[in-house]
Amino acid sequence: MKLQSLIRLSFFIPTLVACKATSNCRCLYGQPCWPNENEFAALVTQLSQPLLHPLPPASACYPPSAPSGNCSDVIAHYTNGNWRSDQPGSMQNTNFETFIFHNHSISACYLNTTLGIPCGQGSVPPVGVDARSDGDIQAAVGFAKQHNLKLTVKNTGHDYLGRSTARGGFLIWTHKMKEMLYNSTFVPEGAPVTTENTFNGDFPLFISNFQ
Image 1: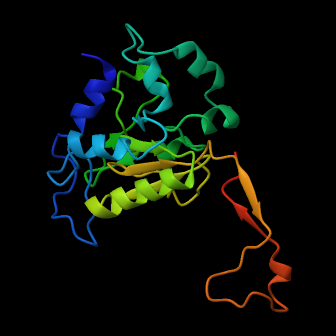
Image 2: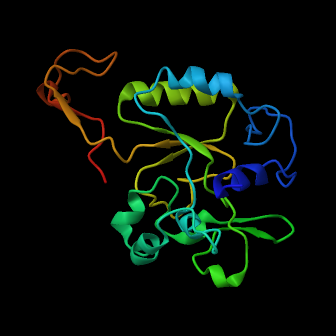
């Protein structure tokens, strides 16, 4: 069985706290409330890119006897921030890729395969949207709202409160949104066309200009 399949199956082990999805208790991967394949397929029709299935970066080195990816590349770039920002399943700080359960056991995917610990998904969301446009964002947010999913947004992975990742959550990856549009006639909704505080309507509309 391939590593990706093992990782996805691991989510169905009853390690997540069971709760009925409400406004205060989001629906997580592996719970009965999680969207089915047909519902995800319907989402894909609204997106410019296929769905993402992020994995921890070190997963390419597992299983050690027959690595599933380019482990040499991972080892060479593991601490490179630019390389990490290009991986939807990678955080700038590796501790945010791990997850600690209430019994103090840990789900993680360690680069050191000699530890003999299986590669786990940790806190890396199992599915997400590779957002390239405002339409992608709108579709993803609407889908998360419809299904009460735990939503997280990741650009480069810099967030020292760990909000750019979430175990069992739904990811919006904005890293490849690089365009910036300028609208010289933009007026905030409800504001007068010209006032002393509108700077003559010169407002740039940022889609994203970050790494």
